[in-house]
Amino acid sequence: MRPAEFFAEYAAKPERLLVGLMSGTSVDGVDAALVKISGNGRETKVELLKAIEHPIPDTLRQRVLALSHGEGNAEEVSKVSMALAEVFVEAVEALDAGTVDAVASHGQTISHTPNTISPSLGGGGGGSTLQIGNPAVLAQRLGVPIVSDFRSADVAVGGQGAPLVPYVDWCLLTHPTKARAVQNIGGIGNVTFLPPNATQDQVIGFDTGPGNMLMDRAAQWATDGQLRCDRDGQLALAVKEPDYDLLDWLLEHPFLAQKPPKSAGREEFGEVTFELILKHALPRSARVMQSKSNLLRTLTWFTALSIQDAYERYLPRMPDEVIVGGGGARNPALMTFLRSKLDPIPVLTHEDIGMNGDAKEALAFCVLANETLLGNPANLPSVTGAARQVTLGSVMFP
Image (cartoon, rainbow, N blue to C red):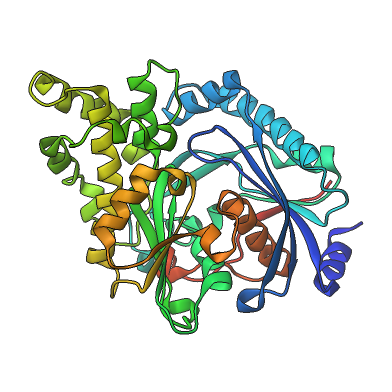
C-alpha cells in the first residue's frame, strides 16, 4: 500500500490497533503493549488488550549502557541500533498481536541534551536527543508502518523533547473537578499537572529529578551486581535513618533549582553523579555509613523529596490527588516516603484508577503515534518549551 492510501484508510477507521514499544533508562527489557484506539485529542479512547515485558540480552544491555556513558563510536552506535531493533521485533512477535495498523517504537535513548536557548531566538538552541533501534528493521521484519523518533521534532523547534507523556495524560486523565498530578517514576521522575477540566495550554509537565536511576545503581553497588534494583525497597527499609548530611548535599543538586521547562537523563543522574555521591559519602563511613542499606535509604528519600520539592516550587497549587506510575510505584519504601511528605494528599497508583501502570508508557506512545498518523501535533509547548506545536515522529513504511 502506498503511503497516501495508508493515511487515508487509517483516518477512516473508527478503531485502530497499534503496538507500542518502550525501553527505559534501566534497559532491563522492552515493554510491549497491544492497544485498541479510537478518536484523537481529548476524544481519545484506548483499550489495553495485551502487554508483556520482553528481555534484552545482558550483553546487549551492557553495550547500550556503555553508549549511554559516552563510550564507543559511530560504528558501535550503528551496530547496537540494529541489534536492538531485532530485539524490538522479537518483542512484537512475542506479544502475538496478530494484524495491526502500525507499531509505535520509542526506541532506546542513549543521549539527551535538551535545548538551553530560548525558542524565541528561533528554536534549535543547541539541543539534541538520540533514540536508537533502527525503525527500518522493524518495518521490513514486521511488514507494517513504524512510527519512531518522537522527540526530535520538538527539539528542532526549541523544545526539550521531553516529557511527551503529558499530552497523553491530558487526553486520558484530565478530571472534571480535581487537580491531578500524574507522577511517573522511571529512571527519571516526571510530573504532569492537570488542572480540573484542563485545556492543552494549562497542562504543566517537567522532569522532577531522579527516579529509580540512582537507587538502582546503588542496589547494584551494594550487592556487588547481584541485584539490579532494590526489590520491594528491602535495602532501604533495613535501616531506620538516612545519611542526613548526604541528603542535604543531594538536595543542592542544580537540576532541582532549574525552572521548567526542564528534562533530565543520565547526564544529570547517571554514573558520574553516583561516583560523586560515593566520594561524598564514603569518607564518613565509620561515622555515618553504617551499612550499604543506609545509602539506599538516603537515595530513596532523595527521590521522594525531589518530587515534593518540585511540586512546592513549580506547580501553581498542590494537587487534589497524585497518581504514581512507573517502576517506582512498586517500591514500598519510596511510596511510603512519598506519602509521608505529601500527606494529606492521596497518593494513588495507576492501578487504583483502573490503568496498567507497567504498560502506561508503551500505551502512551500508541496514543502519540495515533496523532502522528492522523497528522495532528502532539507536543505541548507549555511543557517542553517548544516555540510551537509540531507533529511528532517519523513514519517508516515496509
